[in-house]
Length: 182
Image (cartoon, rainbow, N blue to C red):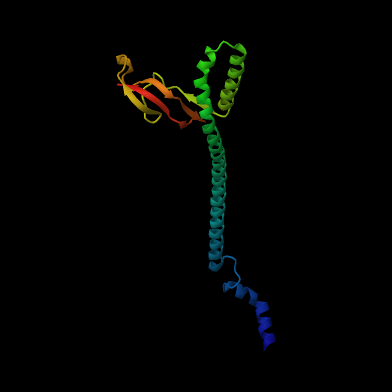
């Protein structure tokens, strides 16, 4: 009987395996396969998104650490420069006394040392704050006292500078101590 069934299927052109394929068990356009493909695409997109976010986060981390290193080196310089500002102030106070001296070699030697100190600090980013004659700015200046202005144009302006203010790499490291006209 099996032989008769086999002959019938061959004569009619039926293939048992083809019937199984038509039933959907092995077909490529199977809806189960499409949902798996969609799931894989979703997973791929999520992986790409994670990768892009991780790359961006790493780039931000690299920039942030570079900036922190630069700021740290500037802070380290700041401590040294602040300590040397006292020496620079003493040099500025001593300069008029040295200029009054008659010993030319002494004047030359000391002015050479003072100029070398000033140039070294300028090379490290130190700038003198110009305050005398400028408008008083509490963000830049520290008012020690107020005096009557010698003329109307000096009202609210800096009449005298007691201690110079300084910038280090365009940041204030010491406020100028000034006398303001009222």
